[in-house]
Image (cartoon, rainbow, N blue to C red; front, side, top):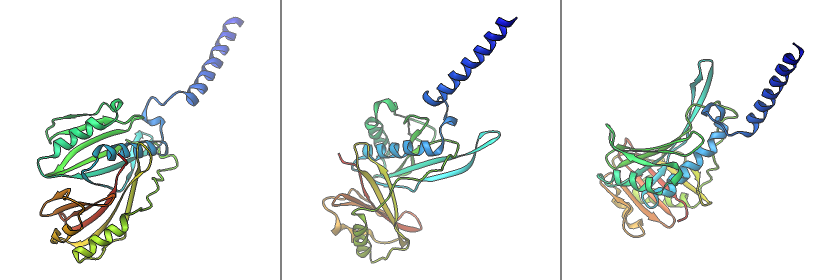
Length: 260
């Protein structure tokens, strides 16, 4: 029947138009519709929100990690982006940090801290399929992460600009106070702050551990942020300097956070 054929053709055309319009105007409904290139800025902004929520604690941004080879579908490879923030506190204060950060994150993230088999864990949803977590990695150490999950690669992840600001002279002063020289090139990492501006960390290796961190005390402007045998953190102007001697190498970092 001619009218049935015409109706079928019209319906097919309508479906095609609706599909074309939806693909260009509707928000993504599954993670696989967003590439790593598109997810990168969301992950970056999530990390900036975490920095703002951490506030005055001793922290350092870790280098972004892009892991390739995950499976989006049985026929398609992808990549995931993970960005991290380490916070160091006196042992016993880890859950308090997780709960304080959860309280300060945006309300629509629905952040909460729950007890788990491996200790308390923060979970939140930064939107656009970006997961935020916080967990205790060891005594006095909490790691927060923002993770894209597996995505199509797109044009890849360029990362935010990480030009150091006032932190290099601060690190030089800390190295001199310890009687050490930098054992690695400075490693700058940055994240955009939610209210504008940029949070930055710059880290260097300061040679083999152990080392007496007491030489840093005269550099502190006020009381130390953390004062432990293997970890010392203090403020110097807008920067927080962190000396971490818990590994085989002493790591020195200087970080400037987000405006209050």
